[in-house]
Image 1: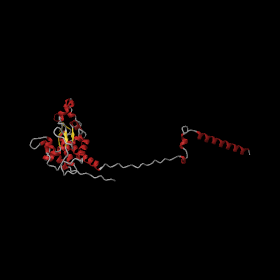
Image 2 (image 1 turned 180 degrees about the vertical axis):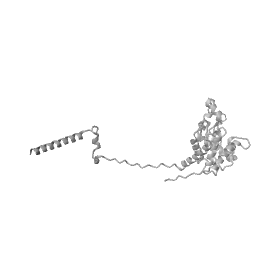
Image 3 (image 1 turned 120 degrees about the vertical axis):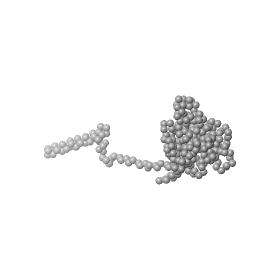
Image 4 (image 1 turned 90 degrees about the vertical axis):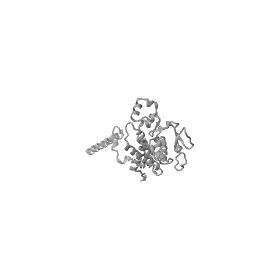
Length: 283
């Protein structure tokens, strides 16, 4: 009987001790006993399943934007094939993009009626810019027309190496003379052959003024897109009127060698590298 009582007492003491241990362990903070948190029953742990966010497909560009990008890539390839850009070049990408944008402007007809995709028109503009300036940055950004820069040692050295912009009056990579009040850009008209050819497409601002036209002032030729519009009108009038670029280059020599170089260069590239638009396919 004493053994039984002793055994019961021992059991009760053990149970009491276990209760104390459990109570102390439960009261302990997770910082003091990090293992307590980790060993909670699995059924008490909240499992958070991340919400899946569907990936939205990128919006396809509009047909007009896609065409500009494709034609710009075509023009850029031509420019790179003619001369790789160097430390003195303007950035080719925006030049190609501006040329493509102007060539594809629905308000502007191409140089040739049959040039439906405008690729020949764009390449002609790129060719003129290449032969005129090799896309030099100091010409593109207007420094070549700045008197202070032209007088500086840097300006003198650059012009000695690459050209002097006809004494500072030729502007943009297309070297357009615009110091007579700027250039008035006239609407193109393929059908009305009664117009005086001297007043078709463009004229100097101090010589004409039209209600349905706009004037690009000399200082605005640092806007490359505006300069490209003027170059397009000048090239289109010259080619449609004479079959070449003699009017654009202002040559009086028989055969217009500078004009021929620019025109033939573009025609040869267009012939060897035909262009066509690739339609966008929605997946």
